[in-house]
Every structure is written in structure tokens, then in C-alpha cells.
Length: 141
Image 1: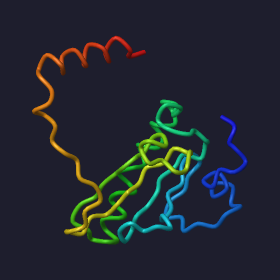
Image 2 (image 1 turned 90 degrees about the horizontal axis):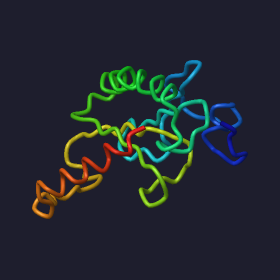
Image 3 (image 1 turned 180 degrees about the horizontal axis):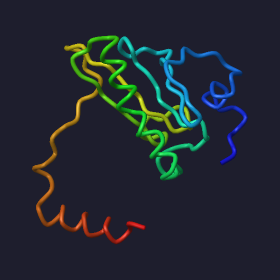
Image 4 (image 1 turned 30 degrees about the vertical axis):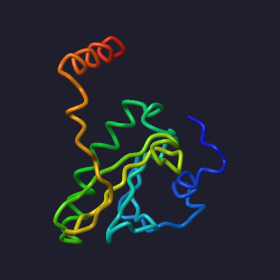
């Protein structure tokens, strides 16, 4: 897929913008996020430009997610954190700000609160969930 000329991650891949890379191979690059939400915050991206999960090709996903455990283990060994969030935002309404697919590896050291997922289980009946599941199944390609 062709990359937009203003994609900051494509510029990191090409070497036009410097980064603090921790891993690179023919298909993916992992580098420290400038924001450092927590110490060790790292991004893993495919070298091939794909905007989000909706564009992400299965072959690219396989290459990317095959490297995720390697990156996670190296971060854990280096930073000795207590937990790790792996996050991915897709689309502006989901807080995606750079439209080149990427995974955030966010080490957790204890008390930080990054987001709070509420429990809405009381709002949906078993019938609702069954109906949703059937609707999604009908759209699997």
C-alpha cells in the first residue's frame, strides 16, 4: 500500500526521522515512544504502511504479532515492570493520532491509571449478546 508523504512512521522506517529503535527486521520496527506514558513505552509497527486494523493485511499482522512476545520479553527483562498493556487504537474516535498501524507496549509499575473500562454487563441480556454474536458471524469473510 502506498504511504502518505506525511506519515511520520514511514519516515522513521525510511530513516528520514531518527528514532530510538530497539528491534528491526525486514518487516517490522520497534522503537521507544517519545511520549513515554510509562518508562519503556514502545511502539511496534509494520514497515509496510497500513493505516489501521481495517486495512491491516493478515500476512502483515502475522509478521507483526509474531514479534510481539519477543519485544514484550525484552522490555520486561530490561525494565522489570509488574505488568504490560498492549494497546492499539483504530480511527480518530478511538484516539488514533498517527494513521500507520502500531501497537503500544506500555509497562505497568503499580499505581498508574491509564484508562478505566467500566462494567456494563447489567445493560445487556443474554439475548442481546446472542443477537450481536450472530450478526457478527454473518459478516465474517
